[in-house]
Length: 477
Ligand code: NAD
Ligand code: UGA
Image 1: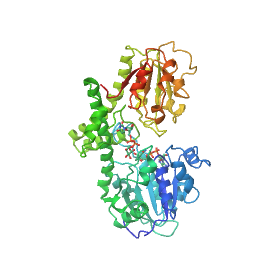
Image 2: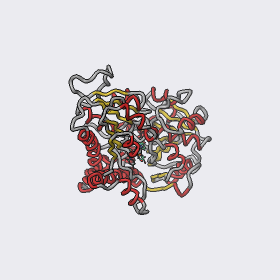
Image 3: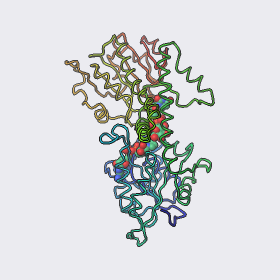
């Protein structure tokens, strides 16, 4: 699939204006002012939000993102629904579309749903002009590039509007940014990974990143290693979280303290100190999806023991979430029916408005099932999003108790409102403002005896106790 590669990339199109496409392209545009970068999406509302004139309604909340978009938008960064025109103008097209777990059909519950990647590859096949480098940015099952190549190959050689025959090269360039730190992750990546077969295409993409990434951090591999490295990185990171959460439960049973254990093991340079924070389990759109995808792939290749090994990481994560909900019920005398519980934090981690697979969803659902009245506060998550996630609407009249004993929830405007008359506070996201809460002021608002359940280890336990509240902290025996 090779032919003449433009030595310099002048025009990039990114299909998918989501959490990855938007920030990634904004940083490329910022660091490469000579490249025109156009981000396209079928979702008109999302594109309109990216074009919000005063930058306050960008569809993705990321610290620092508004400044980067503000510098480049209208100069060499564009957001549009004109997908065909943008593809036709591009030397390089990034596929940054969603790849969620399949919900039905073969592989449902495990395999990635590749319908959006296939649709976008077909759009490129139809609309590209001249030579186009197609870059897989989405996280994909190993060997997906085979499918992308097959789709593009079928269109190769057609003479498009430009009068030039179409040719393509396919690269894998997975993204490793984490939400909440997307901008620093993109500006100073640990590494950029480029997998491919065509040296000229690989160097063309490397030349884009080399505008700001040191040469020794740009890794080149074959296509399949690149695709598999992304799944493997997420699996290893998630595995560390399940490992420390498993030890947190043992700490609670034995009098050990998981923070001390994490510090002690993290001091071993072979283990390292990062990603050892016990919590309510990992959330986010990718860890579970990518491990399940790995499990499916292993099953496909007959590696059933390997599949079971990785499946255990996901199972432990679900167990940890149910365990925390059960523990809240147990400490509140075995019943939470009709009791008010202040839930602080709904996003899957701090500094993001993203709630995909947030531990708060499962934990709140368990507590609602037990009949609790939840008063939820998150600095960035909207009521509409929480309604969609919990699958039940909020209580219409917040003050009226649930007569049926059914669980109910409402969104409140601040932590003080949440804790008023509550029997317990449950901290599920590590927003820094929650670490600053003044418990001497909040405690008198609560009904006694009252608990603080800190699933993120961010409160000062001594201050909570001094305020007359009981405290549970994840992993503290
Ligand atoms: P997202 O759902 O936020 O965005 C994907 C966008 O693609 C959506 O806006 C959707 O409308 C658009 N889209 C789908 N098909 C399209 C088409 N044919 N034409 C135009 N637009 C189309 O997803 P995301 O979080 O940005 O993730 C994208 C990929 O990146 C996934 O594979 C994910 O696993 C991977 N990834 C995500 C993160 C993260 O932090 N969210 C990090 C690394 C990798
Ligand atoms: C993760 C990876 O860190 C990124 O490298 C990857 O690109 C991305 O997935 C992806 O492929 O989507 P992200 O999910 O945005 O990034 O955020 P993380 O910081 O990894 O946190 C994931 C979850 O693990 C969060 O719920 C977080 O609270 C939890 N976590 C993280 C812990 O419970 N303990 C830790 O020590 C670290």
